[in-house]
Length: 328
Image (cartoon, rainbow, N blue to C red; front, top):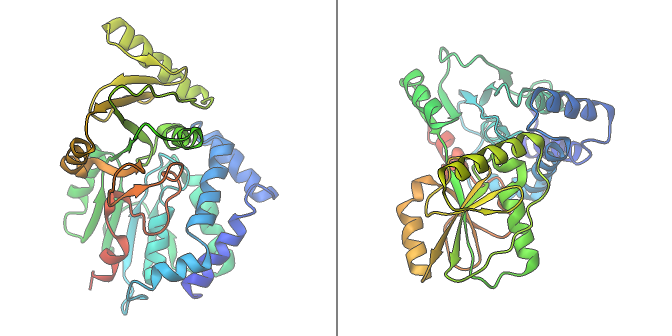
């Protein structure tokens, strides 16, 4: 196989032109046809973020320099992928192949088209790339990385109980505002909240606001599937007589917890940042990332950056490369 940096930076260059040729346009159309949540614009956004944030040669070089790779003895590592946003499982594929292991992919049925497209590009660049597709059978597997809902996670724990495993469930993201954010930062925050229809673990769904602060957000126009969820949630809240603020495409509810319904955004008022820091620390196992410039946090990102993770922004704060290099 080619050097991992050469292989994946080459992929990044090809993905930078995604949507400009017949093959990639066909992949966009098919992916959207099979999953209505994946709009063409959101697909291109996800691919562009991968090319820009994960697949630049200098980024790959600096990331891999932190680990003893490639491993001395390649393993067969199964990756069971989620499908809530386009190419969400790609980061795990990147880690496994860059570590020098063979990657067996079980793609989500919701994101099959785009994963197959990317694997096809990698095979065109190097026919010996150690990637194959799998039905998820644990037989012949040395380790597993699996991502899904909390219910799926319980199934993973049972099915792969005999294997070294890195298993992920559901997480959420929050934002902490000082009340002095610029209009540009608030617009960027709206992107952190509503990109990919708010379906990702990095989608901000809980806002911490200083008491007395009147937040003004301009949500984007959302797709029909999201709008159906918004109208349904609005009707339920109205029938229950519960208070909410209608943002036009989302519902703002005063609550210090993560919402369970799509299109609902919870906001919590605070008197001091110390109380927010204490809440975040107490709920760390539920947190993916925190958007803020008001306080420090180990997984803090800037406004507009939540949906653009780099290779070190590991999901659930689980260092995949460390997991792989310490397998033995």
